[in-house]
Image (cartoon, rainbow, N blue to C red; front, side):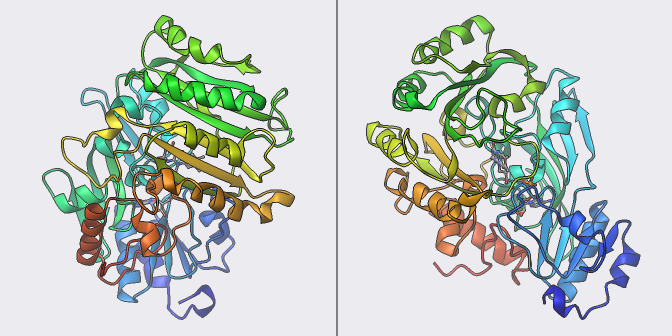
Length: 466
Ligand SMILES: Cc1cc2nc3c(=O)[nH]c(=O)nc-3n(C[C@H](O)[C@H](O)[C@H](O)COP(=O)(O)OP(=O)(O)OC[C@H]3O[C@@H](n4cnc5c(N)ncnc54)[C@H](O)[C@@H]3O)c2cc1C
């Protein structure tokens, strides 16, 4: 059923919910479904602007009764595939955030962004396990595992979920926790979103209010020395220190300040959860490698966390791919330099390497569906689809990341679902998990959504024949 074949009457749904229902010819349709990733435009038959769990359940039942596919979106940061049929449930109005300082938890609605949690938690000297941009939605990030900036210290965000309210494809509202619907509790923490739609989630907060961190920009010509120094440096870092390094081809646009505008630079990112004196000592070997263009590493409040990566805070058209690496040895570094080092012409704007290990490599007390805890680093390439390079960026990004398959933790290349990019066939999607985890996710999909109604994004097929 596509938007142009809209044969059902949506007024019963509109009457049943507190939110709104938009058809493609409604003025608000495009605005409700707009994605942060401007490369994707959704065109479902119906958009449901949900305001509460009951709205989501009513929309799911409405779609299930008509055998219409169902999708869910909060911010569109993870809009890796366009929704071209059925019902897209937009949760962007479900932004409630409440903090329990005694329990050190945050309870959030399906549409809440990390920024709201960071700010509310900071009032109590606490911080959540958000990633590089706090503009990302909490729920979409956590169901994909959620690789936080404090990951080596605390593990994946999905390791710190207390409970969720979930609407499954049969329209049933379920309380999911370590003692209720335990299969779903396992699968929704890392298995991405296609086992059900989460309407509320309670996550742990960490006792962090200040840190020693930020970013240092170096001239790109020093990339070979910096990458080799980074490899040696990360080998000795403890779990209180979280880092990444990126090769950035910054465009000549006014958004980017001088002296970085239009430059090829290396960006070292640091988050040390200890005192400034120790932090200074830790970062000294990297500072000694080359003169910085700008050094922004220092003591800072957790509320300034977005300044570490400086991800774009406005929608951009992007195409990404990621690959887990078993190590960052000389051969891997040579490969990074040959595809993205000084003098290479490429439309891939960002190539970043994040240091994993530490708490990320350990299962939480209650195991979950996060895949591949054995990886040492993740490499991520992002092509920004603007200007004359836009046409070549997706193929170049695919080829760049594919060249690291042989350095990954499993044959065919392992990925993290939040860094996977556009999902291909079943075999490609399966790369986000270990084989036993993927097989169990497929079983759960067959139990909770046998008709594959939730089939967009990183959806796993209901029937696993592999
Ligand atoms: C600038 C940027 C920085 C990022 N940094 C990091 C990072 O540091 N670490 C990291 O792990 N990831 C990171 N990501 C990836 C991000 O976590 C995923 O793209 C995530 O899916 C975004 O969630 P969203 O809700 O904001 O996006 P949306 O596009 O709204 O949702 C994406 C998907 O999440 C699922 N989902 C959303 N809402 C629900 C729900 N209510 N119930 C069930 N499933 C749901 C669905 O599968 C949906 O298709 C980053 C992405 C961007 C664009």
